[in-house]
Image (cartoon, rainbow, N blue to C red; front, top):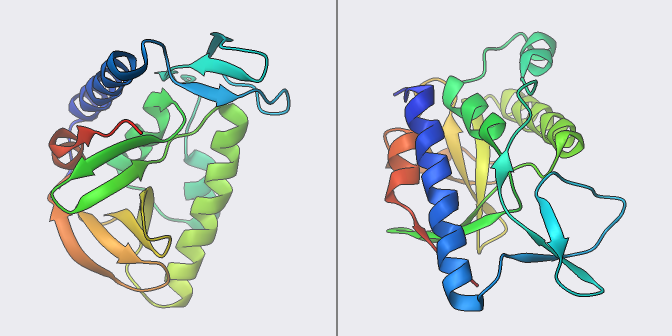
Length: 186
């Protein structure tokens, strides 16, 4: 199932806003991250202290695309996956769902988006080599061997053990899945 890009974008923005609200209610400030001059991001806001900076999700660069990945693999990537990773720059956002806890992956910057593209290519090549349906990862669970993926053909959200076929459907679309999540502030 395919979500409308507008619906998915709105769902992602709403979830990230709700995460920030929960975080600020708990800590009375924006999320913090260790300072790293080698890893700049438009998400960075201001200093928290000498070693940490405040950050918040922000709109991604309008120029982000998966065109090069699709051309290299001669494969069309599901629109929901492309919308998901071109909507926001953010650090991971923790969430809970009926299945348990997870961390939504995002890219931190344009450079991180390039790294994501390389990882997506590697993941797709592995799936093709194993003769498994193509899935696209977007979230991690507490078990490092279990990820959440989007089925590239159907757009359904599945639980998948790394290197294995997806084994449990959890939502009919990425939009439905994002809308089912509750922010989980550490």
